[in-house]
Amino acid sequence: MFDEELPILSERVDPPVIGGAAPLAARVADGVAVEQLIAGLSGPFAGDADMLAAAYDTAVLAFLSARRDLGMALQHDVLANCRLFRVAGGPGRLADRPPLRVLAFAAPGDLQMNMPIEFITHHLNVRLDVLFVLPQQKLPAVLPEHDVAICIISDSDPDALMRLVPLLARWPRPVLNNPGNVAAGRIEDLTRDGIARLFADAAGIMAPATVWRTRGEIAEFLTTDLPISALLPGGAWPLLVRPVGSHAGRLLERLDGADELRVYIDSLSVERFYLSSFVDYRSADGFYRKHRVALIDGVPFLCHMGVSDHWMIHYLNAGMTESLAKRQDEAWAMAHFDGEFRLRHADAFATLHRRLGLDYVIVDCGEAPDGRLLLFEVEMAAIIHLLDPIALFAYKQPQMRLVFDAFSRLLERAAMPVLA
Image 1: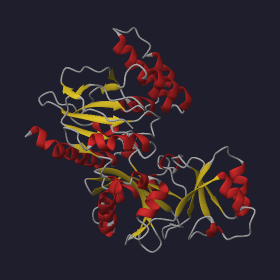
Image 2: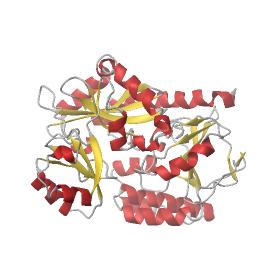
Image 3: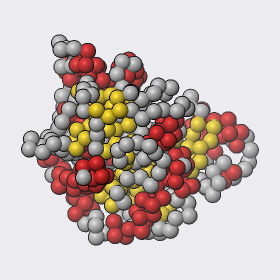
């Protein structure tokens, strides 16, 4: 780590203007072919800035179409030439009021590396600049003037977060999600095993025991007759296993015994795995329900609720589009969230906010059989959006506007010392 000087802030900085992930994802959700969108980015270009912006958006489209390697290669080439981009204004921009100026610190990587802030600010009166923090490279000497900064880097890049801690402690503008405040400065506590440790003793919260183990440690355990608790303290069969770094249920499995664990690790060329206790969180009607809650300045907002007869719920595979009954269930949960789920778990959400030290975070959760708030994942990189078709999910429109408005108020409150 090297000692960095604070950059000069200037309104004269003019970064390349990208479309960004939010409008591109919306067009993909509307059925526009990715190849057609890429073709629309092929020029002609007025200059280098337009070319870089088009290459950046092409990388985003590669990520959106599950071509990660291509996206990473394109992004690498773009960031070698430019680290700062301005996101084009969305429908939330107002003609009669200047936008709030926001600078976001990001890390290189796919769409799961950083908080997908664009899906929120697209609907707000915000000018968003995104600065990528690159290893072994100092920040630019001059950056855009801004009213508030926000660190959007997830726990997937702890080196970038740790590097920013001393710099953001001296930053000349207010900083949201300052990594120096996260979990009392213990950035590692935002990992799956870190969250389990951080909330193991929290009243009203069930954070299933979670550890990571190397392939060698698991293989050695499988040569013994020891109970699974020797590998996962406090654990028992069945357990959940996934590669470290995987998200959205990818390669997540529930295993019932050592033979299944052996087959699982032999099937993957992965070196580290998360192991965690499985909790049967079925409701009385036999369905599993997973809530995605945005915790904004300590206030919880329901962003979606997946309903499934399978324990592993990812909203896209829960069959919400196909089932009117599930959508009615979700609509009821949104309409009654403040008086039901949020009320039952008010103390738990307050504990989450206090211990995490984050201004904005996403909590994927359910309810344990004993009534406690069951934590699945706590992270910044989970997406909340307004991409669902209005014809089927009309009830989400007012709900997500509440969420976006709360985020706007968070930005405005943080910027007050600058704007005063």
